[in-house]
Amino acid sequence: MNAVERLMGEQFGVVRAAALLRYLDRSTLRALVRTGQARQVIHGWYANADADMRAITAVRAGGALTCLDALELHGIWVPHGERAVRHVRPGSGARQPRLSISGVRYCEPVGCRPPTARAVDSPIVAMLSATECCSAEEFVAICDSMLHQGFVERDELDQLLSAYPARIRSLVNWCDGRAESGTESLVRFRLARAGVKLRPQVTVVGIGKVDLLIGRRLIIEVDSREYHGGQEPYQRDRRRDRRSAGRSYIVVRLTYADVMFHWDEALEDIMQIIRRREHLRPLPAR
Ligand SMILES: [Zn+2]
Image (cartoon, rainbow, N blue to C red; front, top):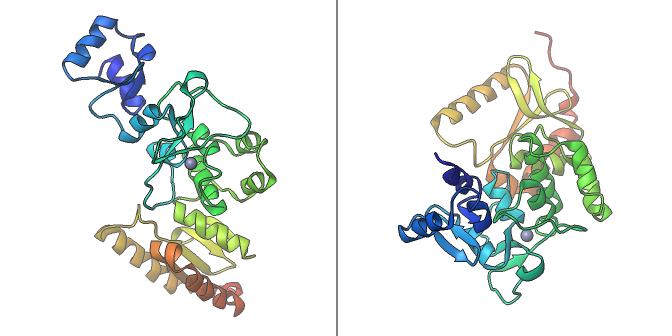
C-alpha cells in the first residue's frame, strides 16, 4: 500500500488536496482523476472509489462528518435506528454552513471549534459534538464504548466536558469502560439510576465473567445484537445459564429487544427478584 492509499484509507476515502499534495505532485493528481482513481468532491477535496458517502455529504455541506455518524465510522457504539440526517460540524471561515441543505444537521462541541481539516472528525471531537443528539443513557453508552476501546481516558472525559452544562458533566460519573456492549451500558445505567447496587463484569468461579452481578446471586446477562448471533454463541450462553443454575445463581438474560423495546417489563421482573431479596440469599456451600 502506498502513502496515498494509506492516507485515503485512514480518512475514509475523502481527503483534502493539500494533504494529497504532500505525497504527490499536481500532474499525478490530475492523472488519478483522469483514470478514475480519484474524483473532486468540491474544490480542494478529493475522494477515492471507496469513499464513505456520509463523509462526502459532510464535505459538500461545508464541514466535517461528526457526532453519531463519525462515532459509528470509528467503530464506537451508537444507538441503532434509521438516521436520515447526516451529522455535520460546520467549518470555519469560508466554509460556513449552508443552512438550507436538507438532510444535514449541524452539531458541534461546546466552547471550541477545532479546524475541519479532515472529512471525518476524530472520536473525541465527534463525541463532544453528540451531546444534543442522544439521550443521557446513550451518551453514557457512547463514552463507555470509547473508554473500553481506549479512545479516551476517564480523567480526560472530565476535562473535555468541563465547558458543558452540569447535566452533561454529571454523566461522567455513570460511565464505566468495563461494559462490553452498548446494551450492557444501557442496562447498567438504568438499573443504577433505579437505585440497584450492582457490579459490572464480575468473574464468578465456575462460570466466568458475567455482565452484571446484583447482590450475591442475581446475574444479568445482556445480549447485544452485535455479539450474540449464530449457533456457537447460542450454545455457549445456554451452557453458562445451566452452569449458573447448577451453582444456585439466578440468571436473567436480556435480549436486545428486551432492552430497547420492552424495558419496563424486564425491569419489573428484575425488581420482583430484588424485592423478594433473593439476590441477597447466601449461596449454598459447595
Ligand atoms: Zn448530531
